[in-house]
Image 1 (tube, rainbow, N blue to C red):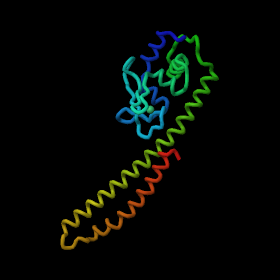
Image 2: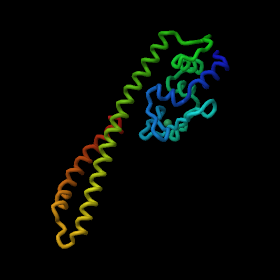
Image 3: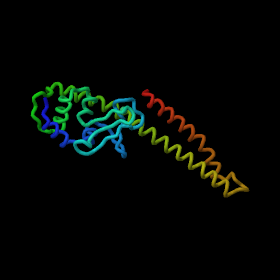
Image 4: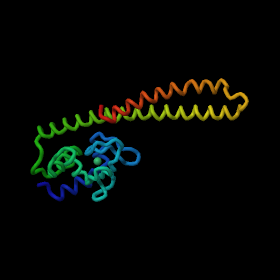
Length: 192
Ligand SMILES: [Zn+2]
């Protein structure tokens, strides 16, 4: 059994943010990550930074929450003692090791985590690229449309200025590009 003193030591030495980042998750500006415990499309797991009781995670979608040890228990499918011991080792926290993981077990777990990080980070990077393309294209479409409106209202007698025609020609091309990226986005979201 891991002692209460060691648990306190682990919880007060590390925190949820460090652990989450250590595992390769990307925490957004609002303090949310993609929940690894359900099929999350938008980051819905809140990560709390603090010490002892305030430190933890909570998913607003699947309603799973807890502290750093609970996170590792669920994420790596470990017992409480193994999860606590694993965190202590990862962060170099000295504890009295009565029941610990063997070197081989630790290596196996590190391998599993690396594989998880790899598969997820690829998806997240893709989603980021596609979303930024989509917002750039739709931003440009809106800009062109407002320029056209402006041109038309300024030149009521002759609304079809060069600028107006250029914008009018560009918009269908941009809409085609938007459709292309949107299809890609749907494929990624569907897990394709
Ligand atoms: Zn969740």
